[in-house]
Length: 203
Image (cartoon, rainbow, N blue to C red; front, side):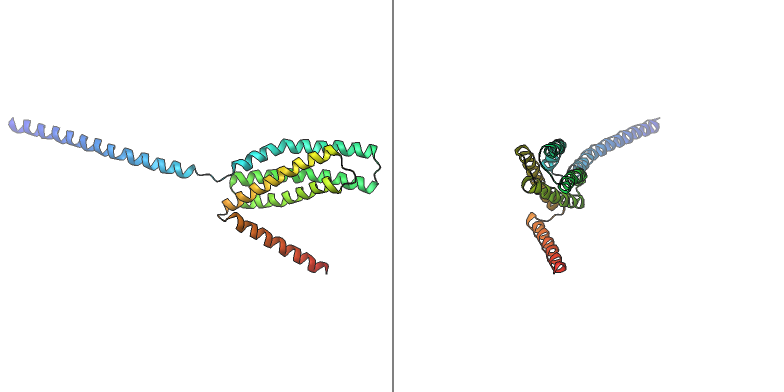
């Protein structure tokens, strides 16, 4: 009887000891899991997308719609009132029509490149920014007839494109892990090479 009672006491002690060890193991595992979860959350929360660029792109979309509508209205007004040559009418209308897909692609690639943190999309958007700026310069200075309202609308569009260009360059430099000055140097070098090759072909 004594031996049986002694065995039961030993079994109870072993069970209680095992339960304590199990609880202590759980106590040690909880902070480890929490710390790992915290590290994963910190790593996944790192984003390098440019919020100012995204906001200016969101603002530029309705302004682009208004810009195209104003250009078309003023174009038909000038054609009906002012004397225009036929070839000039066709050229200026084609510029407005070609501006629409250029603007859509420019905003799309810039937005996609910023959200996906892809330098290639943003670089392509920069090329379209340059084309948009050239069109704005033509509409503001070199048209046959430039109305005051048209000049103001073109200046607003050009200002937004310039701001987007600067923010895009900063975003590309951030995504590519290079400085803004290095990126400017690469852009200037490529533009110089293009100008030299074009001059050689012309000569």
